[in-house]
Length: 450
Image 1: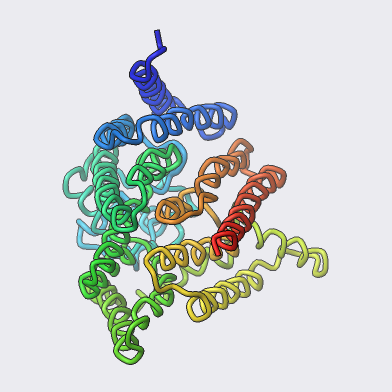
Image 2: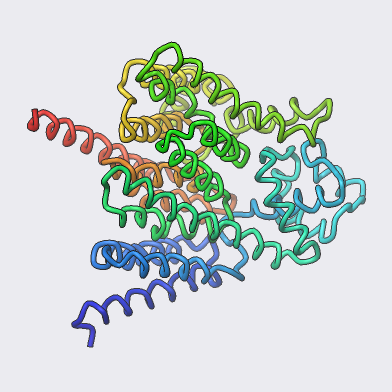
């Protein structure tokens, strides 16, 4: 019955739809066994489709959209961040500033400025509700759109948010294909991102806006390859205004601009950076207040000095520090590790060739990877950027990471949640193992060519 490729394709598309449906509507993140079994099964149609149907680009686009639409009316079950998204959007719609307003303050005072305030606060949790928002202005615009079209329904707000993420992923496929064509890389490689179960579940399913950030980033990179650097800077600025993480990439563009004429190149690089930073300053102006900067920096700083989840190098440093000091020194270690990231970025900025498009994209991949290797907190959806960047390079360790990062969810099987060091160790052994193997293999290949 399933002897022909067409029948096998239909079968595996059906398997994908079924298991995405089960994941979207019948999964509790505390049920780790169900989660990991369904998750790993979904990689079977993923791998089959991008290997056996790689020449049918239209079909793969249609399947990518279809799998995402399965989640359209699902309430995210692996993350509760979306409650804060909806809260912020409705707050702005009421003319209130989310950067200077704490949800818990309204709740404690019994002042409910938005519809379904209690439900949204209970959903986001007291930890989220006790901190100022750290989502930049363009991200807030996405939340505002959900409030405009669905300010009285959490479910319909979710639908509006999800449609934006799906549209962003379609844009990523469009510009990703163009970049692959320009780099002479097979265009079906974009589906390592677009059909990846990790991407579909974490971004479309759990409503993380890395998709929107990456849409602007890949659009900007395409414009840069077209030598339209001013437009590239403006679009890059929008990417930063969704998530701040692309700011890490700025130094890595230095060689790109200075590869031809040093003096004019430096001026272009500085102008490129100034446009990006200036645009973000302008986008924050509508929210300007005396407490804006301090509140925002405090919220961002929490991720470095207070929170820890699914880390690698940090956990080793933490254990060494505890051994000598007798307690967890995250406040100190969380300040030291970013220094190593800055040093690494400086090294690959000035001492590694980043002149060609592929060299630049590989530098972006390594720079961001190192940042996450040093981070105190690595939530699963963070590595979506690595998955997309890897599509344009020869490295596939982020694809492996997208498979094994599901092990981090084992922490939520415990009440209260608690990480299992063996699962984290297994995750990073596989990631680092594949990374070093790829570096060695590519080094050998380059030497053999010479």
